[in-house]
Image (cartoon, rainbow, N blue to C red; front, side):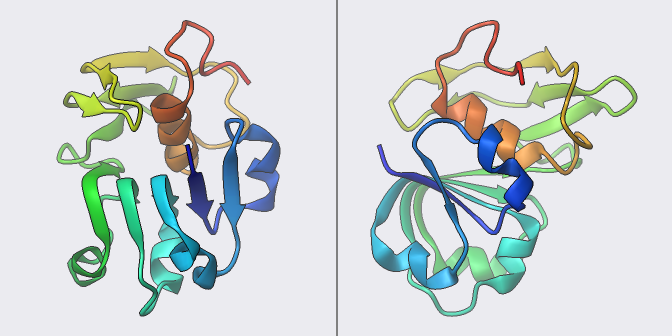
Length: 148
């Protein structure tokens, strides 16, 4: 499975699920068709005319609609603090990841609406949402998939 995240902080490299590439240049996005591709907020700002094709796209909920229209994806999963986002946080004080609707993983499995407490995060929960989404969609669904 080909998976990547565009424009994530270098400090996340050791936190990425196995096999997820950290993409630094926009040109890397058009190198292939991705099974799972995540864009950070900064990554959305940095994209211009690159041809991007993927099966599942994980994007911030406030990603510009014009940008989304240029990306080819079978499924788009949004993350953010809006109730419209598929992945959000139901609490910021003691972070809890909230899956708002059933999500289809790139391997065909389903993630049903539910909540996951997020103890011991290595940073602010809101900033880590794309990383949390990658882990949720890529890693085996066990009780330990959010341990750091």
